[in-house]
Length: 273
Image (cartoon, rainbow, N blue to C red; front, side):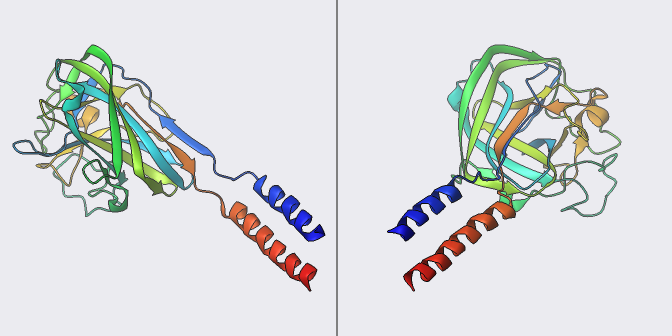
């Protein structure tokens, strides 16, 4: 009886130990109306076009949710977004070949290829998403949709003002994404059946070490161009998104719990002897 009472108290004490798994939240803020850039899943008659912006993790983190804000055509139903895909990239030169000279620079760009284990796609069931209308009419002063070229034709000045419905796409990772401490790029894409999704820019700077947003299409890949510095001569720009999750529990906490349970097992043998 004494041993049972001791076990109850000991287990309660162990359960009372707080898990060292801090919550994680990052956001670049709300759109500033400066630029909207294509971020589109490839489909029949439409080549894939990717926009990416960066964030930093100070410790290993489990990502459970994300949001990103952009434009869809005026009058398009929210249900016209039929697919969402999210990828994460290291910073060049990780996961990349040597610089090939087709763009002005690859310094501080996303890598050539994504982190394969971190790709999440609604078609694969590894994420679910919800689309919410924020504003039925929202204008961005400039845009980049088709003018994505190798040098020396990389500068286009952009393709001018665009107006559409401002929407936020909220994503739940049904398979959470775990990333170690490092500098990453976040790349969301949406497939709109009746047009395109244009990712909206956000104010800068956001954090120490912040990098600007980059873009590429299938013709430019594996390279990327800086949206502001290379293509429009404006900016540089960030993109509007958020990420949330929690830090991976520290080994010290797991070890403390495991050690406590081992001690209970040892004491039980002593009491039962």
